[in-house]
Length: 64
Image 1: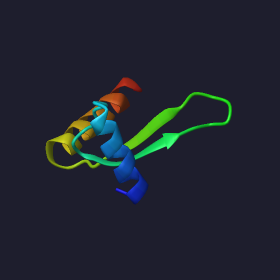
Image 2 (image 1 turned 60 degrees about the horizontal axis):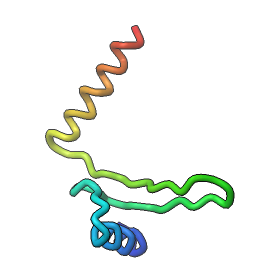
Image 3 (image 1 turned 180 degrees about the horizontal axis):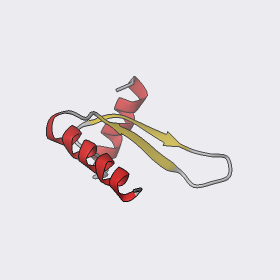
């Protein structure tokens, strides 16, 4: 995680705002006129990667 991402992740955890254990980076997006958003990245490996692969295959099948 970037240094700022580490600080934000740690501060969110301290407040009880849970993010996935595999969280690799987190950003707070604060537009001038809009809704605040949290954007985070999750590292995919093992079974989690397989789950995403199956979900993508399911989406492809639904498009037939």
